[in-house]
Amino acid sequence: MQAVKLSPKFQVVIPQAVREALGLVAGEMLQVIPLGNRIELIPIRPMKSMRGAFPGIDTTIVRDPDRV
Image (cartoon, rainbow, N blue to C red; front, side):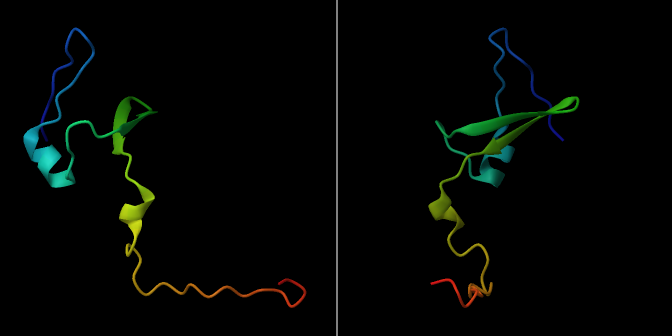
């Protein structure tokens, strides 16, 4: 676990090892979520990047006979 320091401008630097592990790049948007007594930063990824995330999933849809 790595620690970071909050600057006078309320900024933090994400350590290089963490940036590389998550594939973060400069300018990327992060969602900030307060969760109890901690803060979670979640990268906002485009939906296109989810393509192929669930291989083998059944995509057939069962429809009622009265629906088109």
